[in-house]
Length: 466
Ligand code: FCB
Image 1: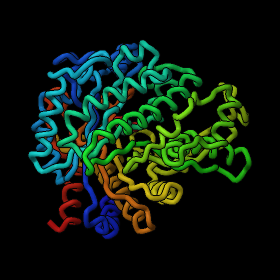
Image 2: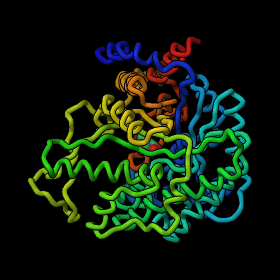
Image 3: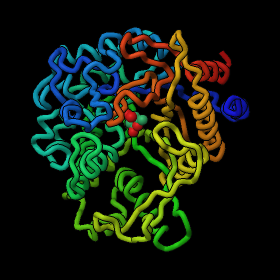
Image 4: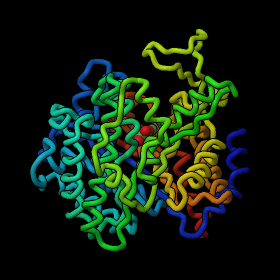
């Protein structure tokens, strides 16, 4: 009940998101498509990682997922039913270019060709992401993102897609969340390819950024004037838990590794000195070659922001130690004490406003789009499949209001994509965690719009006055 009351209190603020504010929903290829071996698709690092026993909760995998590959027109109709004007999706590299080399696999490309036509046919704007984590397995076998050649392979793949779709797709995102690829994939080992090697992770950071720059340069040369390029980063706020020196250091390091190590080279053409120093003291470095930073700082048109939670840090662990088991300075996340979602992520819409105003302040002139924001809750469907998801609805309302507040404070936020259109394969959490505005009953593949989806639709209608 309180949550419903909360929703109402946000309406006035949300209503300021008028004019040409973009309203979208987001998905990613591996999380929804299924059809893992169809039409020439070869395995990505996620297909391989899902075969590692217990790498994924319940040993789930994306072989079938939401069967979107076969239900795409129905799903695009649902995007329209939610009242969104834009649809963010990603292209699976191993469908377009099996094994990560060579020309276009026509059968695999055909799916995205039809998808884009379906989206445009319904009057929606396609918002395409080239890389949402499905690296062809052969490229990982050749070294993956820690090796430089992968950046060049990515630029070649990007051009294959770009040449075919540039006449119909105006918004191109190179990478989704390189932090997750580098840190979760190569340092923490909790996401594909599941490696635990700090130095490899830092090489991956640089080569992911290089991949973005190379692809952006090449696509830009071949682009129509109206085409826009961007990159999507996951970001949170990093505050010190107290004003102590160690806590401030822990927060500085987290912000450096989470935000500035990406945005400083992208926008200013240099890595932050404090980050380089931190890395050196950890025996690692960014493998920068002459000319790389010019490539990485190729101008781009928008920054995609994925926000789920804010964070605060202490430089002292729960046992009072100032050095972690990895030998690096301790970095402990200290909860604010806010309510959490089913992911255990604290619900902190105010931090979202802070992040957006900070981005606009520190990296001015860069239009922002929220390319992901949303929440997982343990849904309880009624006998028809309908979910009265008060928690997710309240999260959505509060975070839309937070975006509106940031805009009032001067942040240049131009659109919002809800994560996600559908319940889907939530990476290492498998199918247990549900983020959809639409419920998917996996055994029957039945889709049912949840209360949060209705709220989103009604909000868009009201704000647009339609
Ligand atoms: C982001 C991912 C997205 C989804 C959400 C919950 O990190 O980009 O695919 O899993 O988290």
